[in-house]
Every structure is written in structure tokens, then in C-alpha cells.
Image 1 (cartoon, rainbow, N blue to C red):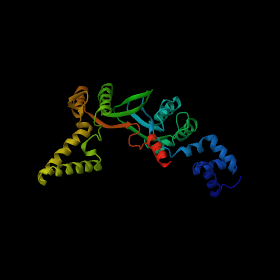
Image 2 (tube, rainbow, N blue to C red):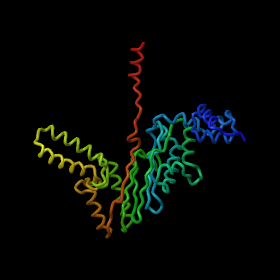
Image 3 (cartoon, rainbow, N blue to C red):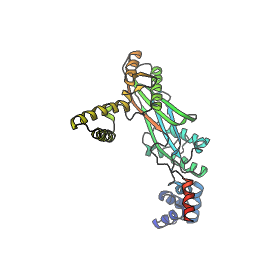
Image 4 (cartoon, rainbow, N blue to C red):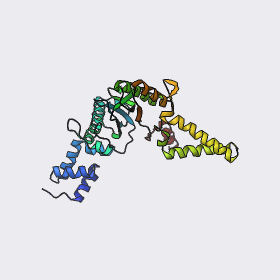
Length: 311
């Protein structure tokens, strides 16, 4: 067998744009023959996938799933370049299979390398889709919630197919009470998280991101100082506004959308009385498709105007 040198791997990488490890494997599979290795990569779809990897992928699907025992739930976000792909049966099926696998894999890096029930590696599934459909894709994120006793509830909004949507929310309720009741209340809270005008940033005030608090404090301080109030009064104004802001963005402090006279914290207290044992929100997660991803906007009119002025 021919020696697979670094120079040979580099040459194949430059020829195909595939990853270093994929190039090395291709050369090993083809006895060091560059042309045969390039054909092997094209057959596997790896060359095509690599060439598309720098293209923005902010569309796609959020997939959600609850385990059979009701105590574990997952959300994954599988991205593609266009919303048209989200309607593709193969893409939807891949998202669902990834969600099933995510029930036992919390970290994204281990999920990418994990095998499905059929023995397929998640990365290979995505690479195959890229080669077949012709768009860049990526498994962007995954999150799992689990409870020792209680229920994890799932709510999917703007559903695109079975178990897939454009927005997904998980809520985990810990408690020894009737699981059916906890699941129902959890789903209502998940609907609240999906539909409230101000999506919650954290479960409690203590869990708020310090950077987010500092940014809000800076904004409120600037606003108070510009009002012309004395410094000591301005500082009191800021503290009051920070407390009000926290009530707006902390889940337990938010008014429940189905009953604005009741906070989520009060709803949990009411549920505890209903089931006859303590209930607590262990956690929640909200995935809105493409949030935080920079989307490329093609301004056709501007491009035409530029071409006209240049001519």
C-alpha cells in the first residue's frame, strides 16, 4: 500500500476542498491514488459538502421529542439555507432521527459523532443530505432536560410536520405528584414561553446572565442621567427599573399569559396544592429557528443600481 504522506493529503484537499481527515481516509481507501480518492469523495458527497460549508444556514427546523417515561425531553435545531428545504421529507426525517439520538446525548459534539438506532453517524446523515439536496446544512444546537420524578413537557409552534416546527419549548417540572397533571401544567408554561411578548431570559433572577444585567443597568443609568435628576435620585430610579426589568424577563416572575392576574411562580404554588406535594420548575429551554444567526440579505435593487452607475 502506498504511503499516505502529508503532501498527498494536502494535494487532495486542495483539489476537492474536503476535510483533512476525509482526504486521508479517501487516500487510504484508494491506495494513495489521487484521482480515485477524489472520485471516492465525490461519491460520498464530502467534496460537495465542504464547498458549501461557508454558506449561511439560518433556515431549517427545530425538532422536539419526549422520552417514553415522560421524564426526558430534547430540542435540536437542524439548519439549511432555505425554508423550502424544511418541507423536504428526507430533511424532516433526519431532524426526527437526530432528536431520538439526542435523548441520550447532551453535548453537541458527541451528538454529531453519535450513531442513530440504525447505526448511521449523525455527521454522515447531514453530509449525505448536503450532497443530495444541494444546500449547506448543520446541526446548530441541542439541549436536553431531565427529571428524577415529575414530567418534561414539549410545545412546538408553527409546526412543519410530525415533531418538527419553527419554534420549540421544553419545560421540566420536578415533583412527586400526578405526572399527567404536571405534564399538562408544564405544557401550558411551555406555551407561555413560546407566546409571551417578552421571552424569558432565565428561570430566576440569580440565573440571569451578568452581561445582560450590566447592559440593562447601563441603559437605565444613561436614561436616568439624561432626565436631569440628581445623582442619588437617578441611582434609586435605576435600581427600581432593574427590578421591574427582571420581573419582565425572569420566567417565574412573569404574568401567566393564560391568566395575567397570576405569575408563573403562583401557578406552580397552586399546582403544588393540587397534587399534594412540592413542585418546582427545574428548567426550560426555548429554540426559535435561526435566532442569533446572521442572515444574508440579497438586495437585488441595490445591486442593479450599482451595476447601472458603474456602467
